[in-house]
Image 1 (tube, rainbow, N blue to C red):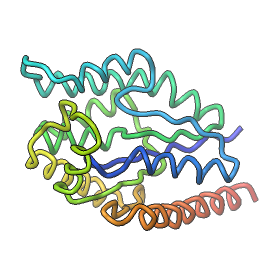
Image 2: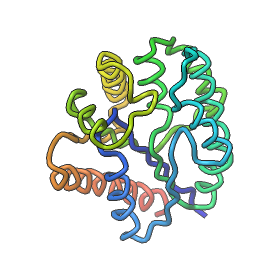
Image 3: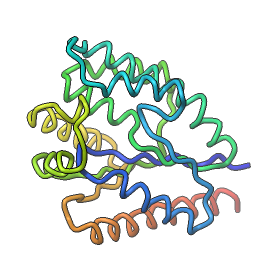
Amino acid sequence: MAVGKFITVEGTEGVGKSTNIAFIQSHLEKQGIELVISREPGGTPLAEQIRGLLLAKRSEPFDATAELLMVFAARAQHLNTIILPALNAGKWVLCDRFTDATYAYQGAGRGLSLATIATLESLVQGDWQPDLTVLLDIDVETGLQRATARAALDRFESEKIEFFERVRAGYKARLNARPEKFILIDAGRPLRDVQANIAIQLSGVLASWRDKYTVKNQ
């Protein structure tokens, strides 16, 4: 049985990840693809408990290294309990955030060593990476306005605008380092245009994957 594909969706606050993940899910399922939908941090009962600790506001200062280690602890549980078993069963996984978020938030945002993050990434993931990352991009001020209007802000969403500017730059650095792994979407446009762009670019990637599979099996 063929191993499934792993697609992640990334972006700063207010880019519309939830809405567009639902759109991507519909787009893929219409093509008969069996999907598992998940998120990070979280995805399993234990990882969701870690997520709660990470997002909750608290009076005690949250050490950045402790935050990083908790993110990877949740990821190890998620990866080995949900993601890899699903992929090995031939299912596809669509995930709200993954390791690119760690480089953007804990690396660029918090200023932690990218080499340290890479060491933890290797420990938890080995050489394994998502097949495709959909990066939803929006100017930080607009995104924060959307996030503020949506619901009460969690600990990450309550950071200052300068933090999110660094996070956005961190995502762009990831894109520039491996452009073949990403599709970049301007999330500041009207939703209809955003989703039309996602459909076009995603269809192109799927066609490429089908072509490679056909050539490999001829």
